[in-house]
Structures are given as C-alpha cells and as structure tokens.
Length: 316
View 1 (cartoon, helix red, strand yellow):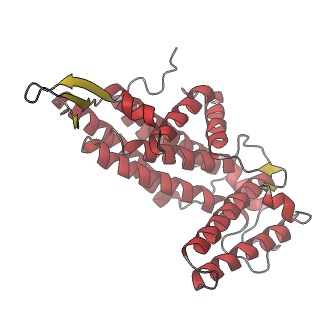
View 2 (tube, rainbow, N blue to C red):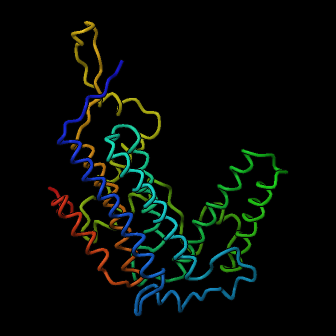
View 3 (spheres, helix red, strand yellow):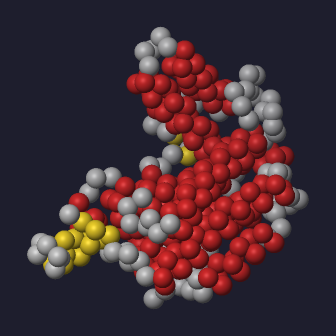
C-alpha cells in the first residue's frame, strides 16, 4: 500500500506561492481582453491583417462564424482562454498540494493550446496575412471534424447532434474552398491549405520552443520535447513516472514495506515553470502581434521575477 508523505510547511508555502503565479497569468489574460477587446493597434501586424483581410469577408457568402482578420483573433483568443482555464485548475491543485498525479495533464494541455495559438500567428511579423488566415482555418477544420467524429460515436448518425456537426463540417470545407480557390479536398484531408500544414501536437510544441528560443526563451526545442514527452507519459498510462515517485521504507508498526509518494518541490516547480513559460510567451507574442501596450505584461513579468528570480535567465 502506498502512502503520500505529508509535505513540510516550507513546501506547502512555496506551492501556494506558485499557485498565485498561475492566477496572475490567468488574470493577465482577462485584463488584456477587457482592455483591448482584440482590436488591432495602429501600425501592428494585426492592423495590416485587418486591412488585407476584411471581416466580414466578401469572398464568403454565408459565413459560419468569424471571417477574415477576426477569425485569426477568434482562434487565438479561444486557445488562450482554454490555457488560462487550465492555469486556474493548476492554481487550485498547487494550493492544495495535489501536485503529483493530476497536474501533468493540465500542464501539457496548457502548453499545447499555447503552441497552437502561437502557430496561428506565425514566426514572422512580416508574414503574409493570408498564411495566418489559412492556419486559422486549418484549426477550425480539425475542430469541426473532431466534433463530427465524436457526435457520430456518441449518437446514431440520424441524431440531430451528428447531423448538425456533419452539416457544419461540410459547410466549413465549402467556405474554405470559396475563400482559397483551387484548394482540393485531398489537400484539406492532409491538413494543408495555402501552403500551410497543420502540425501534430508534439511538432507544434517543438516549433513553439524553437520560436521562443530565437527570441531569448530559456527552453530550447530539444528540452521542450523532453518535458512534453514526460508530461505525456504522466498523462497517458505509463509506468515509470509513478515508480520514480515512490520511496520504499519499512513500516515499524506492521513490519511491512510501504511505498511513500515523494512530493518533490524541485520537480513541481520545474513543471510549473513549463506551463508559466508557455502561457507567458504566448500572451506576450499575442500582445506584440496586436500592437497593444505592454503594461499588463510588464506587471506580470515583475510578479514572476519576484517569485522566480531565475525564470527569465538562460540556464547552462
């Protein structure tokens, strides 16, 4: 039988302090949205996209939702909203010291959502707005396909939920082809649009780390891939992560061996850093794309630096 060791007061206090950083990141996202309403600032890449990609898009006769530059903003803000919600969950878990088994899934999902938000915006501020729009549509397409697939699994294909999901999926493909003439169904099936290819989960994460490293990020793509792989192993059934957390000892009361679960503050803090870095970089990148003032980011930076002085320092 396994028993979790009771964390020391020092560990408890530090985990609560880390929890406050998750809350600060989530609050920074909502404050950003409330202040700027996803409106492009002057002379920003987003303003150029607004000029080049009007919304509503005249090429789309019956839009299913946002189009043009507003579609790019909608996809990015949805992914950041999701990531911020996971940070809220992490705050609750860290504050209650539940940092062994439940946190990796939320950290992994935070990183994935941030990676896709950044991927939509791209790695070059001077890049074609059409490419950003294509990437946003690819995200919409795979989302609609997943909705259709899972509705078909949960219900009969005559069920209203499936019929609506299938109708939306087909209509979205028609909208994409109308917006990008010459696009084939084969290309869409391969997640290719306007020369853009939707990356798989690990590839998107690795790409994000490559990009952030080029801007001075402290995690390179190789290390990021290792962190992501370990988080995935902690999320999906894999034996070694749990075994690494067990410390066998003799129970003097019974004479039996017991396995104590070790609350490792260093590991918990490093895992937190991975989630915080992904979200901080994604929110910073989004702020830069829209050309917004950096006061909110600056305040968040100061709070992180105060709690984690080496957060923005490159490690040897």
